[in-house]
Length: 172
Image (tube, rainbow, N blue to C red; front, side):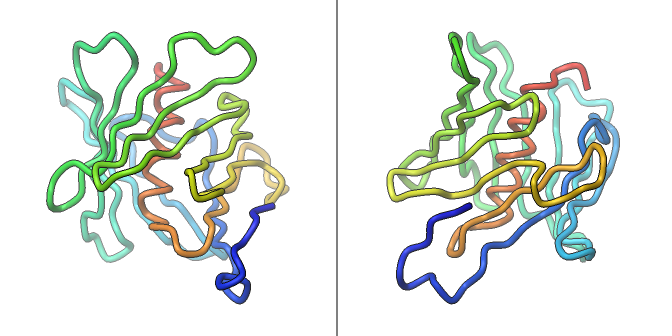
């Protein structure tokens, strides 16, 4: 479970539900929280680069996720309304666990480490845990949860989890 700072003790973490193997480029799907639709992921088909749009339930574009072409390492960028927000890169050599680096354009970085293929990993910053991804919140087959720490940009964390999923399962 997430460790909280003293000032965040009253705020519970948000848990979002994702379905494994449910989406591919060209498909749309919903990310749910508490049985309610929280974010829509619009998979843009017929594009040269993989492109996904994370939207609010009302259809407002929050983040655009795009694959970077011609890079040595798998790289995807997350853009907000005012330009690039983050760049996610997969490590080339990962002997025991998969690792991804998230460079935040506003400063700082996140580390994604764990069993990515089985959706069991953490997202950490220098300040502490940002989110945990795992199957322990839901008993539904092919479903995993994303527990976001209080004070984080939930939509950005969801966007990073989507990027990691796309990079770990490139044939979707």
